[in-house]
Length: 296
Length: 309
Image 1 (cartoon, rainbow over the protein chains, first blue to last red):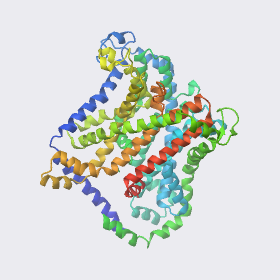
Image 2 (spheres, rainbow over the protein chains, first blue to last red):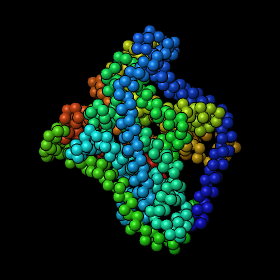
Image 3 (spheres, each protein chain N blue to C red):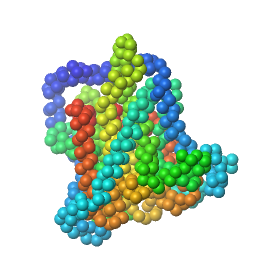
Image 4 (cartoon, rainbow over the protein chains, first blue to last red):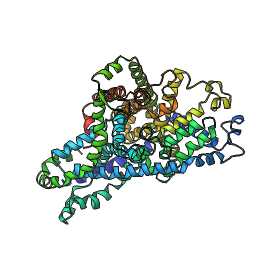
């Protein structure tokens, strides 16, 4: 046991130092990669730049001017128009659905991951296998029965209708990633907790939970982003205007104001703004969240 | 590493099984909350979609069993091979558009230190946008009358992008690439940084150039990552819905009517839930076949990596 525990950090340290020296060895110029890198950056940035500057143009001033130059008389009218179209309500709906689905999804997945790693036996193995299989279930393919369940359950046109399936489809990947991290907690620590007379329940919250916190934050952000941007569930499970979440509101707004391109783009900016703020605050977590587990 | 793995099992049995044994009974219930909601809203619907494919339902009224009626209707409808073909095109073309560029950019961001922080911030912006937001923005940007092309008086950018079948497909592929290439290059970058330096140093001593190193070290070492990234790309393309729904609604002339959209339009616009369920089953089956194929290509070691044991 001890060999294993000490071997791991050593291997990790080795990897880190190797990537450190790799850095210096690749200081040689990589022209091809560099050229493509900057070119693709332009491809990424020009549309975003255009979206942002256009959202500050007046709908009249939009047509005559150079589309790549910011307006000389920027206006906030478009943003006002979007905000007047119940943006605050849609924003709140999105917040409720995202938090209401992400937090329970991560908590129940963490409990399941803890049990799968710490427990043993056929039951837990079968459950784990079921979750792994779940990774292959596409949400789109199950939307008709979900719709049926939601209407028969009297949940149609509620935010709960969006929350419940969102939790279900967040569980497989979250369990997979979290169980990988719970597995990394040294067994000695679990033993120590047991010696101190801690129950498994206590060990889970007081030992495993804090030690897997980086992974918890990461999966929370990843699933939160998925749910925040979700479109299919709200499209199918609600049809009341006051229950729209942001992506759906964006789509209906675009249908209503399709000729007013600056206003449509202002709505795009406003719906993305909250995530952008999160991105600026927690870029590192968000990026590792986006690739969670895939290059581990 | 390999020694520790091999010695571990022999030293473990003395202690752990006893502990694990006593705790199993008490831990089993911890999976219940996750299990119940997963079964109710993912497993049951998956079974339900098979059942519903043998019924007739308009989405509101009663559901009646009609045997194989839906299946014969779906399988004889020329719309199905068309939707399969369009889906195939999206999968293959978006893979071709994304993979080489993602690897190249992955190499680039794994090595370049100077602008890394700046690049990373800007590079990943597309990932934050919802598919709906991206589609709406591009719809405006590509508008043949009011978009970027006519505004700049650029003829080649002034096309009826979403009005002509081939162009619309091209736009869909481009937008998928625009949004997801940063993500995949990030995955490749992570993998490239794990390739041992010693391999590069050794080949450098042997006089291998940069290009040679890329093809004989970097690419082969990325095999597993390529399978992971390709799986994500293919599954993503297979289930592309929001983007096409907002951008083209499957048009023009069904040129971008992929399987997932075909299912939606059949079920929720034409109110034929039985037919739509049969299409959904086909979607699941295609997904499973593709996943199997990729596993096959990836070889046996793949499985253990996915489970992360």
